[in-house]
Image 1: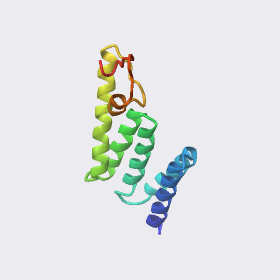
Image 2 (image 1 turned 135 degrees about the horizontal axis):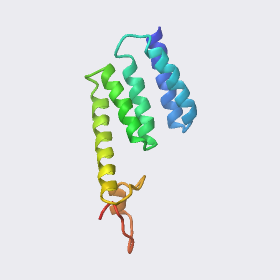
Image 3 (image 1 turned 90 degrees about the vertical axis):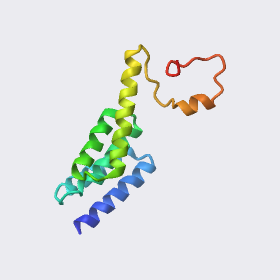
Length: 128
């Protein structure tokens, strides 16, 4: 019954996230995490992964990395969390390299979007 309740909480948090009800989704995930920690492993893994997804959407890379690492600790064979952890490590390394080279990371500017846009006469530090 508690596992079913956990699945319902995860579904509710995901729906709230999709509806941009971020504060509600966070509260739901907090409740889900408390419940998940009363269940045997790997119950906390999907909760930590969803928390990581929300943090990544907010471009809070280090915190998302930590959440994905917790998901992997709870379930070491969880492939999506491992992939997302790798993505966060690359993002963090890229931003650090950009900072060390004197640039500043521009949030929300993906390389694909930059190349597709008409940016005539404008320069982009990330591309340089």
